[in-house]
Length: 396
Ligand code: LMR
Image (tube, rainbow, N blue to C red; front, top):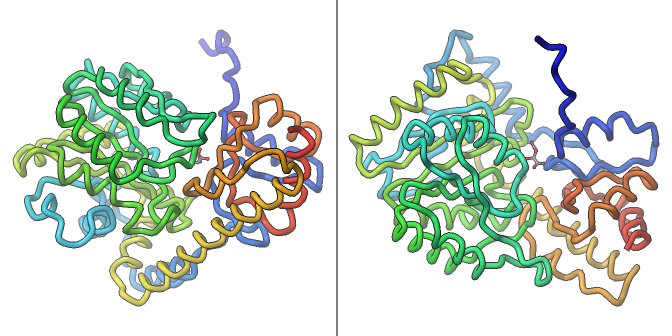
């Protein structure tokens, strides 16, 4: 049976991580996957995480299974972070949250859930989007279409084109939106634009699926949640896939969550039962450790304040790298305006480099970024930044 298998192409992001590892050039620079690095090029463990782990090691009494949707304390912590205090959705018990292995796990459960709710649903994805989005939706047999999102000439959201396409969505279709720090463009909707999207989706009877992987990496934990909260308040049904890979640095612990908002508390319980069916058939129940860390940190005012401060420092370093990157590019090529890079949010910069230019950077300089021209700004350091700027100037 296996003899007929063709070799699949490498993953467009994680495949490059592998290629980077295998590159023998000691001067290689990795700007591919969305993984934060500090000034020394290391991906640090948050101090708050280490402290929480020490506490867990001390107090943990069993490794028995969690329930299918994970620990209720974790679900409550996730909801607090997503919705903030005083949420009417929470007060009305319209939201249920299931712990999932990473944001990807949450999206995959969401895909199964969507198919169960409406197997005719089309899932609308921004063009461009994270390459794993179409793969996951297609994996469960859902139809996928795209809506235009990015104006490459203006380096901003092409909101008119986006809205024109979204006027075409059918009732009970699903529109995947990036809660903040759009991956790969770094171009986010303004609050006014979120408002217009909410009104249009309400009018069309479509359901947003929000990929919320970078809360705290744009402008701040609360600021980055504004669009998500606005949709949650205004629409009867919303799906939210949260990830704690980036904002808690828990990449390999695989910790995320799927939140489903339904019209009322009774429908929410039906949704919960279907989420359980989906999870049981994929991975049965979630891994505990990462979620315990998040719950411990968010449940302790002291650890939470420490984590918040560390996350603020992470965000500031990224902002600083953006500023220095623009300065460095400008020094190499005064004829171009690179200022759009400082307006982008989160880990990524959509540099505008072509696939050919990106491939030259890789083959000639061992500088790795995604073929789309997406660069992980959080991989820049004061040491590698001049080399990257000089190499980009050379391929431009
Ligand atoms: C990315 O977009 O680089 C990250 O979300 C990592 C991944 O899994 O692709």
